[in-house]
Image (cartoon, rainbow, N blue to C red; front, side):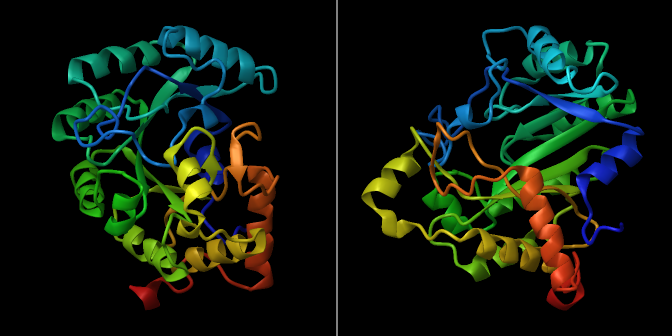
Length: 309
C-alpha cells in the first residue's frame, strides 16, 4: 500500500537495504541553557530520564553502552546494523577534539555504521560540520538532529530554550550540501501557541533544508519547571484530545513540503514520569490512526504545500 506521507521506515529500507537500529548513548554532555552560558535551568519541559534507556549512563564508556544496547536489541532482531545515537542533552556542545574522541570511539565498533547526533541549532559551527563531512566521505551515515521545538520566538522564550528560529535557519544553511542527513524535532502544543501557530510551523520548516522531521505532542513530566507551572498556573496550557491531535497532525502534513520524511508523530513518556496528558498509546498505534485519518479525509502530505508557499 502506498503511504500518503514520506515515512521513515521506507527511507531506512531503501537507504540501508534492511533493518537499522539506533542505540541511545549518554556521553555526559550538558546544554548552554543549563550551565549559564545562555541561561540556567534548561528547557522548562525537559527531563532526560523520560527517554534515556537504563543502559545509557554517562559513567559508562561509550563502547560499553553500545555493547549493552546491542545486547538488548539483538534479542528481537539477530541481523541488523546499528547507529550510535548521541541523544542526551546537546551532543555537539564540547571542544572539537573531545567530540572527535567520542564519535570515533562509537564508529570503531564493528556493528556501528554511522552516527545520529542530537543537538541545538545554536551549537553547531563550520569546524564541527567540516569534521562530520569528512566522516560522510569515509562512508559513514551521519545525521544531525536539531531540536527546533517551535519556530515561534515568543514560545522559545517562554520555554527557556534560549535560542531563536533564526538560529535554526542559520544552522540548516551552513549544514546544507555536505552529505549530512539533516533532521529536526518539533513539539506541538507548547504554552500559549494557537492551532494557527502550530500549523505555521509546517510553513516555516518547509523552507529549511531539512530531510527528516520528528513531531510529538507536549507532555508534562515530573521534576521539570513545566510540572511546577502546570500545578500553579494551569491556564498557561491547552491540551488536545487524542482525536484533535490526530486531526492537527493531518492538517500539518497537508501543509508540509512533500519530500520531508516523517520519523515519528508521537511519543509518550514512561507512566511513572508522565503527569499529563495520558493517551496510553504506543508510537505505532498513533501512526496507524494518522494513516487511517489521511485515508478518511482523502488527503496526503503536501496537498496544500504549493498553495501555502
